[in-house]
Image (cartoon, rainbow over all chains, first blue to last red):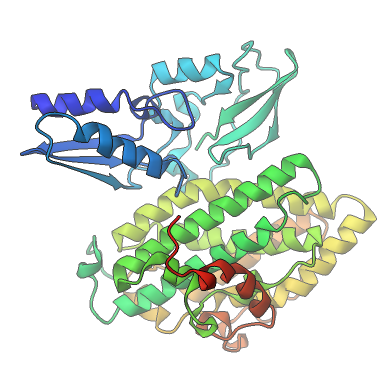
Amino acid sequence: MTALHEQVWRTLEQIPDPELPISIVDLGIVQHVEEADGHVLVTLIPTFVGCPALNVVQDEIRRQVGLLPGVAQVTVLFRYDPPWTPERMSDRGRRTLKQLGVGVPDRSSCIGVRVAAGQTTKPDRPVPCPWCDSTNTELSSAFGPQRCRMVYYCRDCKKPFEQFKSM
Amino acid sequence: MTSRKLSKPADLPDDLRPILADWLLAAADDVFLLGHRNSDWTGLAPMLEEDLAFSSIAQDEIAHAQAYYLLVSELTGQPPDKLAYGRSPVQYRCAHLVERTDDFDWARAVVRQFFYEHYGWLRLQRMVRSAYQPLAELSGKIAQEEKFHLEHLDDWAVRLGTGTDESRTRAQRAVDKLWPDALCLFEPVDGEQRLVEAAIFPSAGCDIRRAWFEEVSRVLDRAGLTVPSADGMDRSSCPPGGRRGVRSESFGELFAELAEVYRIEPDARW
């Protein structure tokens, strides 16, 4: 790994998702970084197809990576293979989101590509409340205010919370 | 059948490229029009949760349409916005089902989406095995999202069928009314068999149709609704329809609304 390659990663770690207070690296959407002779190629795997945040992220990467000394050109590509799942979110990202009342399914409950094999999207175990950790929760709706999230309700602390779709 | 991987447009045989473009337009147009139809319910769905859910589903469908238009664009060089808004009606490839108005009858909106979701899901399961890699990859991602739609619409079909007398009556009326259109979802685009043979769409038309009938019947049974006749499940029963450019009477009004802004300002940048 070149010094510039490392610098690119460090820069990406500072770029927040426009809708979440975590970086795009913690979110797990940076799949690949390549650098050769000042040409940087960043491959992203979107959380959702056509997520409206993608253009903002793309512009921000071009701008910030473009400012690094020695960078002549920045290309941002979107790929769907492998498909993003919440499994890819870092522990730091998970902790930050939990503090804000947004739950992230644990890695073993992500169904990922197994979806195609006919598995249900319904979690096979109780979903813990990010506020009070109670598992006495219920699904209010599989569709929340954003495409990637569902809405749950905690019967113990009587609060609704958002949960990433366990895809 | 070939196992050769086709990783970019240039890997496709010249004669298959326009057929695939046409076939992808069918997939794109289906979800583009359906997403537009469903967005009519934003603010009007029967309850707040459903308002969010149906709007979210509409948003997913339009995002999927955009992704399919991009694949077409890579094959034909036409810009995605022009593909979405700038064709003449006969150049659209959507099935009549997705053109149909629901007249703000919730049961009809649910049944239209329910019929489509089962078809779309079966089609995706085949698309993820496509020899054309850009299609296989995109389909795998879309399948993750569509699984939530499928389960949601199954829940609604059962909820309406097992709810009140009125909800059951309306659901049954919608099933009966939309059934002939649903069977024409399977109408092939011209040359589709070539894509099947090249494993770009690894499926035989009648096998997806039979699977759809079984899946839909299973849910309608659970909902206590009557499954219309299986007659017409064979290919020959579909007169030339949406996939070959014949538009239903519902299309004109929908298209006028959909493309209004584009026609005023075709080169607008967002």
